[in-house]
Length: 193
Image (cartoon, rainbow, N blue to C red; front, side):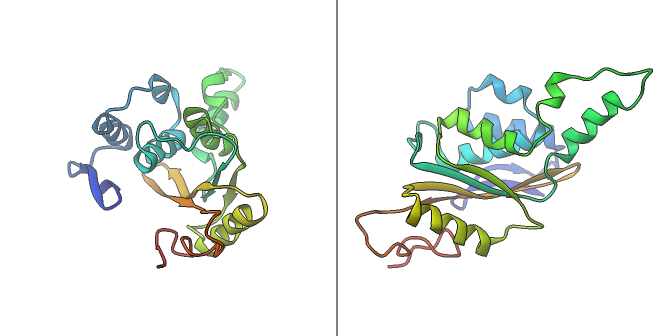
């Protein structure tokens, strides 16, 4: 059973075990979003965009060059890659679709999030088997210390047929607090007094 939660608050309960497309549209409606481009996206992008909406909320202000987006992913854009390949693999049924081809990179999900929230800071997607908290923590810490970012959306978003997961965290850095690790540790969401 899938549940969409934000800060331990239930947004949408998939108690009927809906397939992904119906489930993600249920979450979209529960959030009250009005973003028609959402319905043109592939499943990976829909998952990343919806999870970001749950994290940031409508009307948040994490736009601009001081916000970074650093994600992990296991299966890249394999579902869209496979769909695209099926359109070009046969000479008799050769019908490549730009609407499918455009989603054949996992970085497209970063682009969709950045466009929606007007984020212009660094955005990168790293391949990893599962959420590698240690790697993400070290990478994001360097962004705060060296590149002077104030916010970072980080975590893991992965989609394959029948299985998907998205865990995102919003990390902040307070430049007035000289202890750079005071609000951010390897657990991402743990505040240290």
